[in-house]
Every structure is written in C-alpha cells, then in structure tokens.
Image 1 (tube, one colour):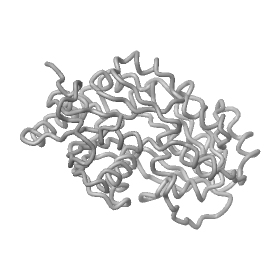
Image 2: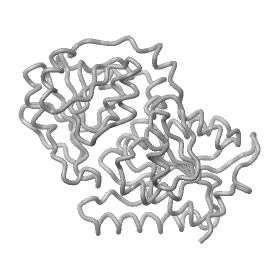
Image 3: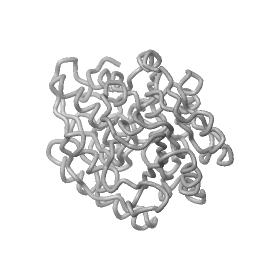
Length: 343
C-alpha cells in the first residue's frame, strides 16, 4: 500500500483554508496535549475531532478540562493478546468513522492506532514523541509518521533508527504546551506535601523493571504528608493518601513541596513550576529530563538509594523559573505551522 499522504499533494493547504484535524489521545498526557492543540487550531477556524480510549487517566481528565472526546475502545495491557485485540478493534472503528470523510491531518503523541489508520486512509500524520525507550510503540507507529515533532534535547538518531521520514525539533519539552498558561487550582493539604507517582508497570517498556514507588513513598512519610497517585487502582494504602477521584496533576505539583516519580511527565510539570522534582533512575537516560536540569529547573535523576537523602535536601524549596519557562519553545506553535502549511 502506498502512503499518498507522505507527498502531501492535497493535505497541506495554503494558510487560511479550513481544515479537518483528528487527534487521538491514549493517556492522560495525550489528553492534555490534545486540548492544547485543539484549542489553538479551533481558534484558527479549523475543525478538530478528539478521540480517546477507556483508560484510568483519560476520561476524568477530559471532563475536568472541559473537552468532549469520542471514546473508542479501551486500554487492555494484561497480555500481548489483549493489547493486539484492543488495538485492532480501535483501528477498525476509526476506519469506519473516517471511511467517507477522512480528515486532512491526524495528530497524536505516537498513537499506534492513529498512525496505522492515517497511513491506510492517506491522512497526513503528525506525531510528537519524547520516549525513545518505548521501543514497541515506536516500531509500530513512527515508520508511518509523515512529520515527527520532538524536543531538540533528543538526538535525531534516536528516532531516525525507527524510520522516521522528517523530524522537526523545538527548543523545549512537551509539557510547556499545557503548563505555561495554566492557572493552578489550590489544594489544601497538610505541609510539607510530597507527591509520589506510581510507575507505569504494565507498559511494554516496563517489562522486567521493579516498581519501587510504594516502598519509597513509605520512607518519605518521615518527611511529610504523602499523596500516592496510582496508575490502575485507587484502593487505600495505609501510610499515605490515595485520592479517590481525579486530582489535576499540574495543580497538585504546583502546590507540592516535592514530587517523586519514575517516568517523568509529572516531574517535568512540577519542575516547570519551580517545585523540586526527583526521578528514580529506572529506564536509563531521559534526554528531556537532562535538558531541563541543565537549564536550571529543579529536576534531579538519582538511583533509588539516594531518593530519601535528596528529598531531605530539597523539600520545601521553590525555584523561581517563570523567566526560564517563557524562554522555552511551545511545540504547539510548530504543530500549528505544519497544519497551516508554514513548515
């Protein structure tokens, strides 16, 4: 099958034309990205269709952000069979949804299902990405992407290895798209307040990795009130608070005295707001985390044995980062230019 979208004969229309855009959000981070991008494009007069799947982090967040998403399929990570079956079902549903009127552009943060359907239907495919270590998803989706928008912190060779055709880089990180202009809600909790985010244990890239977040959270109760944010369930854990419903992570990290995680999204959200943020070294080098650290944001990556010591050193400190945040580029600017035909 030939991907006619790669040549972009009809998709990249001149600036000012009305376009149809589809964004598929697979996780909570993608929902935030979708909202930032859709609001920008709608303000320019374009029509945007937002889709997501049933997932612990998507539906409540979409409601909290006041956006309507069409729910297509679900997250089913318990086995390779369940993953494949859920993915194929989503692809068939999208194929039917866009059979008669495909959009001009499909945009995602590496949605394998969007990438496959966009390729098959000749939809110009824009993706963002910041996790070269997510090998399975990258192998399946990135070879089908027409333009990849990614932080200049990540060497292009990391994505060229997956067969990406064109890479556009921006001088920032993804989280700038939704952190820069958000006014955080105020949460009233006992101080000092520590946020611990559970590892994404069912992700394919986490196979064989030990989740130490609950163990570390228990140790951190010596320093303050701990809120533990689980990935898949909200059952109580005796030593610390487990929210029974969604709490906006951006607002929560702004109110916190310390944030600890394994992956990095909530840690980058915190660091961009001046809250000290510790990433437990589990998945190797994170280029975007190193990038923020080198630019003076309070993000620290350490071995598990050093988390408690570093927490004692930095808990309760706040960095003044507003000026630094304003200097970072917003990836949504680049996505707008791509849609408008200005890149």
